[in-house]
Image 1 (cartoon, helix red, strand yellow):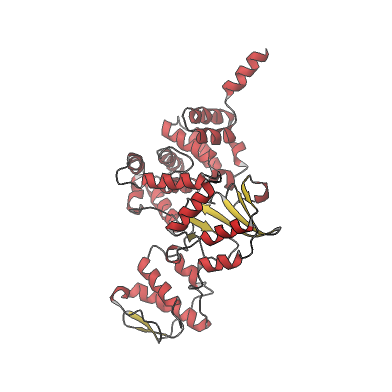
Image 2: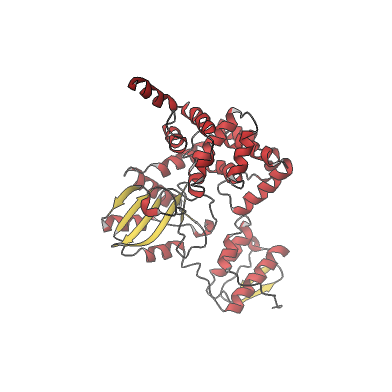
Length: 389
């Protein structure tokens, strides 16, 4: 084998899973690391073979770029003398860590929050057998895991052994789990059966958020979908080449790439923000349980400071869609978790404007979020004052 210059300290599995856009290379890495003897290998022309594991098949032909990646990764593994445990997979590691759990607390918000004990408890199960049933129902698809959803998740499942919290898992869009303090190298995508089990188990106990998110995603993945067509129509033109055919998750690299394209279309930051507010305000309607792809606009907006967003809003008369995008952004969970102190920066006049806009709908969830962010409608306060006088 030719000598390969080894990079600095690299976690091979993290390196692998961060490249999920390159499915063929990713599959080769996974097959290679799952080999019984991954350090006994040879690279021959455009194929990889192992002494006890062969990847030499037509589906595994690799091009020059892939071969260089595989060579570097193989060298790291070989020189380290290690055997990464891909086969002791995501599910097994979680089940082992949760063995003996006696309590499950389901709380609001995700694993980004600074004070989880203060978050609302949605469900508290202290039956060890029922907790074990939930644990066994969690199954992760290792071939599709390793990405990193850009949101914090909601709700969070906290597992306890007696009085000790042993793991916190945030639930993302009814599809995936994040275990920030565990050994997983990214988010774990639930198998379809496991996702349905967990969603329904929570829903029958009154935690319906994940079910709403799943149903919303299914609705908006139908072939004929006016709200999705509107979303794509309002998307800034320079983003079109970077929009995937079936968007499910956006990682940080994808958001950075889209931001670069958007900057080329709108060099002025204020114009860029207004275009994003218009896009974010062109969604299906709900602020919770909406199609995941709509979070791309939110992530792009959150690249800008709150001061910059407020300046852009203050310089113009907002359109209805821009007003919807602004209200949705400031009242959303992401803004609340990432910038908890910034709501006080919003001028009172703008708060009132966004509140009145948000209350002009039949969506009770949207109204609740708007009231939490912007306060109660003035009309109610005014009528109370009138009666008291």
